[in-house]
Image (cartoon, rainbow, N blue to C red; front, side):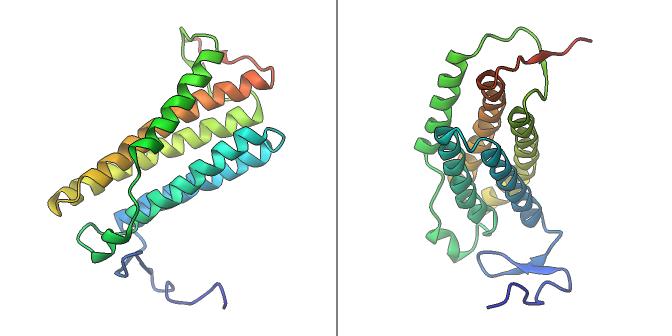
Amino acid sequence: MTIYTGTGDKGKTSLFSGERVSKADARIDAYGDLDELNSILGVLAVHLSAKEELVAELQQIQSDLFQAGAWLATRPDSAAIDSLQEISAEQIAILEKAIDRYENELPGLNAFILPGGHITAAWAHVARTVCRRCERKVVPLIDQSMKAKVTVPYQRLLVFLNRLSDYLFVFARQCNRIHGVLDKPWRS
């Protein structure tokens, strides 16, 4: 099997649910951002390869992002929606527990911090901003899903992305901490 098919040469692609849409479709744009986020997490994991538990945590999130991507690549009125596994409350709770765990290990914040520090923290901040962009693109898809009365899975996906961006902020700070780099406060 070859990687190229030529079916996208005219600016169209297929959704998971089978429909052919423009590559400029809002769904393609949203799951493209999700794919970018997943790739950035892969880069972050490579830079953290000596920290196996952190890499395992990131790889689980990458897997969850594939699950989320399937939702974004499926129209809510499609029969294929029934075959998708929803983002669970447990997946969101896992992120919340990790945030709490990291926050307990970090000094408190009383100012904004500049993104950066150690290379791993810098990549985590990039991932956070891509996650936020993805969130913004999912909101109109939720509006569309409400018309098709498929709201819970999409709303939970938005909660997951919101929590993930919080996680990535704290994860960036944790990366700085474990590498002995101080967060740099913003000064106006």
